[in-house]
Length: 309
Image 1 (cartoon, helix red, strand yellow):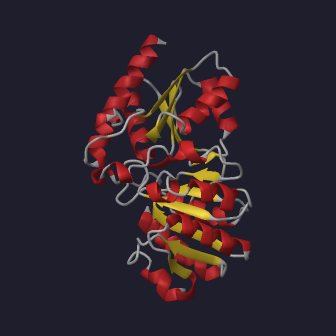
Image 2 (image 1 turned 90 degrees about the vertical axis):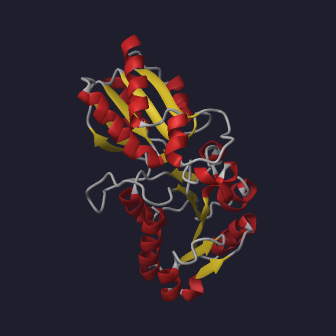
């Protein structure tokens, strides 16, 4: 995803002179094309993320459209006050790009795990939260960010994520989920880089006789309430899937909605990381397996839940 971001932000900067890119001392070679084409619009703010977001907010107040790019754990946990007061309170169109979200940097330990960021940020007024499921969704969302007036947290993976969509461009809408796979019995609502896992899980379940669909909620805030209503009205099982803690994230947002719109038909469960730290350096695939977030594990859990419902 980060390669797709670098490519598209360079293209957008060529047609939109207000685009400015700020980096937290990473992505130096990644943005070589951007720097060569727009040297006066690239700033390396160093390992000073709070200051970086403050500078970006000042640029936005002066008519620029700043994108702040660094590792997801560093652009969120260290900077909540600046995000809240400098960006959101003043309704400044700063886009915070958190790369390597979730367990993408699992091998670097807890400092680089990003499993609580959505929960921390989705209660901040006026801040939109976008979590594209693959590089195609990312490419389609970036122009939409420029067309809207609010601050955005863009939560992306790192590199090598599977591409789910075959089309190069998608007709996406911020705040509107994207159907990826049809299914009559159950549906998996995914966000972010768990989209490929959700689609594969749906395929396993369908092969076992449980017709299962999958949707990409590339927008966590604002939440697509109409699609939620349709899903709970037409399926006997609705499941959320995210590479984020089950506390406070996308699944919690859906649970909050469900609390005010009870479903007499569908059973609902959240899948994500538990309310616990990982006290080891491991790879992303192993961490997912430990949390029960691989397609075979998820299919088995969902099958058991539906059998009891």
